[in-house]
Image 1: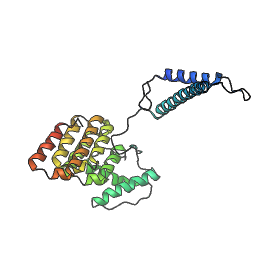
Image 2 (image 1 turned 30 degrees about the vertical axis):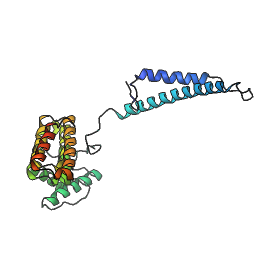
Image 3 (image 1 turned 135 degrees about the horizontal axis):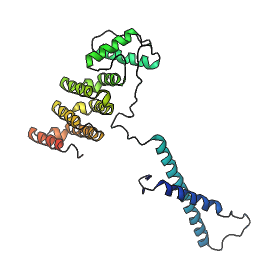
Image 4 (image 1 turned 45 degrees about the vertical axis):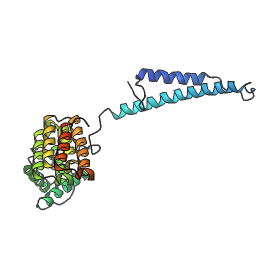
Length: 269
């Protein structure tokens, strides 16, 4: 079934039938004679005009539905990520690899090393022994268990650790996120990616540590796309509430009551 521009869902076979009928109807219509006399009445003109207009509209609608459907088939039916746009899976790297991907990875490693008091390595675009040593150092420091490669788990953790929103989280929350990500590893990269999106959401960073902890426990119990989306929507709403001047003017008891009520309605935006 295909639903176009909010209209009624229609099966592919019916779309093809409608389009074909419109084309045949348009093609079999006799051409106008240049020297034929004009119709006798304005009513006849209106009837012909409306008839031609309906055929044209029917034909264009069929073509539009067909084009959109083919585009959908070509692009696939994967749902978009909860936030942050399209996620690109970076290639796995190991000793001997060369090129722009290695250079990008070296820059990511250096960003983490600089923030953690370590000497930077040379950015050469060559996955040499120094790069391999730096990757192993990062893996040991963060608990990533990939061996002898710089794969998706390592790249995901680097993206997390280098994110400014994640860096602004309190230490207990960062530890919670790291441990939770390590629990997923290669067996569940989609859940790990959704957790990374939650932890790097600027609205999540605005929540109190208690609410951050509640959100992470909620996601751990149900690491689905729906759960991640509800947490991000909740984070956005609560961050908006906390920054509102009228809410700030309320008494502490009232504000606490509102926060608790919002938390109870996490799944009901």
